[in-house]
Length: 474
Image: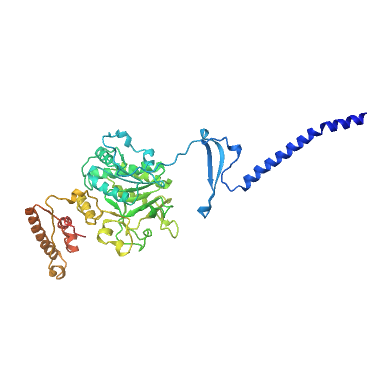
């Protein structure tokens, strides 16, 4: 009886065991399907019902695998939590267009809107680089020339620092990105070398010291320079440099587009064009430079920079880059080649870039002695100054003439003071006659280049300065 009862229990419970076994086998098959589909799937995303409940707001970290072939780079999505628990990373908005003026009838925003902040700079940054110039209203035409050259070559990641509220408003209504430096400067041309001029130099140093902690690369420029070619690709060739600066070097130390040889370049480092990276050594230099200038109002900003940077010069960073350790031994310095990051001498006088068959990136109107008007004339003569159309629409029209110089004044005799004055005075008489005719006709005289002997210029500065106003070349 006991054996019969056991047999009945086994017979009765068999369907239950079969059901359990079938369930286990089906579970194994389903699990295997998902595992193999995840392993062999060509998709980069996880397409499983287990993740289908995630909303679009869930945070997904994309880790791109490095590869020499960009086309084969793949991204892997790993879900690490919801967006509510992690800060969002908004995409960088495109730069607002240059020269897009505010709508007619709109009001001028409050001045606080233009205060220098990291957020304001961030709006103009591209590839972590910001290009900056600054000035007061007296240099409005220089600033517009600076802006136009950059915008025409497609470079728009720049800002203009305004040292007076009149310039803030003028640039805002023209659609030029501007910020208020809070300098409360005069709106007139203060003149080179004056106390106010030196104050402007200190404002530059304060500006550099303020921007670098924002974490952006800073290409700092004076307004009396013009960009002729996009400099950013060139600067990017030296990613290890903390500071790249222009110089007053008049003799080339290289014959190509390498950095100038720091061992041979003995001229002053010119702070009209220099590029700063937000590194610890560069920020230390900017801070000490600012403190030095604020401690003694008699120190010229450029002299202070040179004294600090040349405190230590050498050894070279490596054999190839052209960089050198400077300042405190940790700053990596590079000298922009003077033949293509030109001074007034290497561009207007020597035309070094032409002799070396190179393309110039910039010209800075140094090495001329007729003030702001002389700088403006130099740029106009080179046809790189921006003037509105009405400038060339003079009332009554224009008058030009072709000067005549006897060969004996050019070629015969010694080049001395007497021959210099004979050559210049002969040409000045022709200009005087042309001015008289233009005055009678009510026309504007287009001046001609005046030629003189170099020795005469060196000894008679005032007379040479007069000649400059008529387009002479040094």
